[in-house]
Amino acid sequence: MNPYIQIESRKIGRDYPPLVIAEIGINHEGSLQVAKEMVDAAYRAGVEVVKHQTHIVEDEMSGAAKKVIPGNAAISIYEIMKRCALDEVDEIALKNYVEEKGMIFISTPFSRAAANRLQTMNVAAYKIGSGECNNYPLLKHIAAFGKPVILSTGMNTIESISKAVQIFKDAGTPFALLHTTNLYPTPTHLVRLGAMTQVHEAFPDVPFGLSDHTLNNNACLGAIALGASILERHFTDHMRRTGPDIVCSMDEKACSELIKSSNEIWQMRGGEKAPAEEEQVTIDFAFATLCTIAPIEKGEVFTEKNIWVKRPGTGEILAEHFEDILGKKATRAIAEDEQLRASDIQ
Image 1 (tube, rainbow, N blue to C red):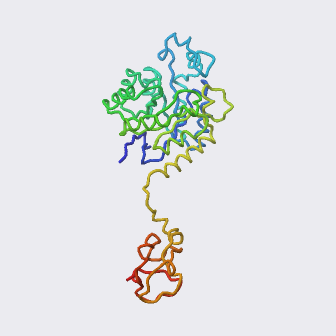
Image 2: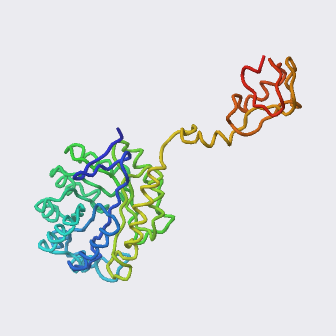
Image 3: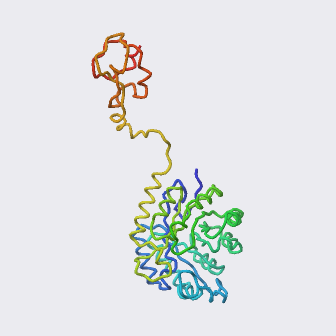
């Protein structure tokens, strides 16, 4: 059995269909109504898990954050999060709305207070962002809850990820690892799917995947081909929204396509290089077998002038044995254009 984790009834690992997480995040810009409209679109797209971001700004950031401006913004990260955060009442309402539609609600806590809120809300699992991958005090706090964790590992090294991994193992907390590049959007050449496989090689007993910030589904589909079990992309109901991560979000159509295509690629993985049983119907006409191209007398020697290889593949002697038969004698008289049988060879 390959490693897997389970969030509610959903098993996640190589032996199960890929999980596509639709991250609404803070694209709703603090509007519960907009968040619900995004949930509606995610439901129509076939999403199983909707991911939110839980920001309690005063516990998350010091005043110094008011001077830090992200690369994809014109105002400080403090102002962005203050504007976009849902309060506890609205976040509970959002969780209930997601669950009423039969989907799973998870969220990323960015502080101890946010983690505690989510624990009070009884979320099924925690998603931890790359910025918190080396925030070991917070990881220990979340690990103590014992609920499944999906940990993004962007901006970290195998060494720093190892410390996070040990925290969850020590706590007996089930977890999965996601590679990501924390640029919004991520240029194609910086996706680095090789880094994802390196994470898997370092921690082979852990389900893995990709949290993607590019502008289309290609990186995610490539990740599935390489063995990923989890895909995460920012999500919006339409690309005309103005939320912070809209530029690298998938809309309803792209999300639906990602779910369908990732499942198809998952089914294509694995196997071994041998004919499939189902190919026999093609083998029967496509392979060549030995047959006569001239009448042959009993005792006559088989040569290139009286036997050759022709379709279909229903004869007893495959084309690969042609040279083995040359020089041997016929045990009977054989008419022209007959498939040779093993009993025809002396």
